[in-house]
Image (cartoon, rainbow, N blue to C red; front, side):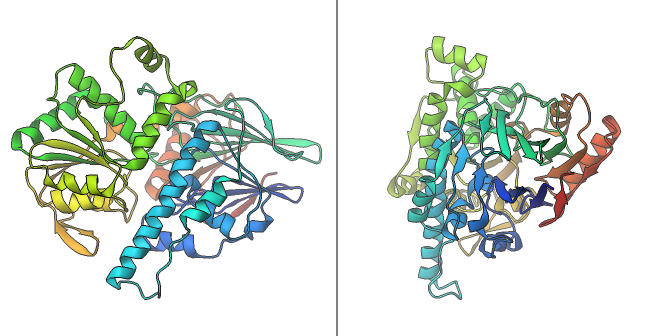
Length: 465
């Protein structure tokens, strides 16, 4: 009998890994890093609950590191099979995985130089070379057609509307002549957002895995353009900088789209905009090239517009460390967009060390902030933020803009679920913290009265009867 084991994203929003077993074969859906608290990050170093060499195939929903970032570790520890994804996800992983490895190597070198680690020498979780070996195992599958993985497994992807290439998956398990349809939501995106198509809704499933990142709350309903304009204008008037920790994939491109539109409408001044993330710069090029993911409005703008919708008028793309450091010398109003989005690493920490003590400046939080992350600490009112082992005073204004989240809010998740013509036999809620998991379970019970909704625990297994 087929089984599923929750190797990640169970009781937390990171580390997505779902092991499906049927007729002695093993398929791993997603292979993400745990992020956030020290306890969660330790799981990345712990021995995986199963031997990676025993896994036959890996299948990806999308490219975000909490869904793909463990792949080099999996390969390092013995996985030798194919890694299936669509073309856009493959292209993004070509950027994301080496970047993740580089940051880990950089962090290990920094810790070694300061003598902060008890390990001699401190090691990265994996290296850039190991990430490159991993990328050689990628195999592209169709964006929307059925793909036969093996006699036991076939998959059909659908648009999830979360980031470029993001999909939810219909996985058909064939065992003993009987078929079981399992739907993996991946990360469900927003409706009526720029650039990407809206999420498609599933209609049938025997088993459903649904993310619940925002299962307990809604995103603000106000105009994102008006709020962004107010923040930029107010900060510029004070003479400060708007510093935006933003994921290189998705969030940066959406921000650039809105900022350019506000400039075109003359609602904000044409300030210097620094995109300080080599990966975000490269990803923006991929967003422009993968037309299959673009919605009708963005396609029309590309074809008939008289400007680049993903670039501001005075944009500075800073790839090198030297260019990044020069941003510290900018004393006039500006906008700085840099990774990581949850302030768990990357160049954004250097910018925060410089700008957080400045009461004229604004730090704009535009995405989900996991427990234990720097972004969550700022949202929770921290008076000091620990950056590179120094306590940086927080005097800048901290503002959260929920409208820019790439994750569906509770009503959007319920809208996505409304497509089912009949309830799944079993629904598992994943990729959420306890409040999100419980909130979505209660909402499903209240609105749809589904019979069996389960919140699995880490490493728990279930038979897919």
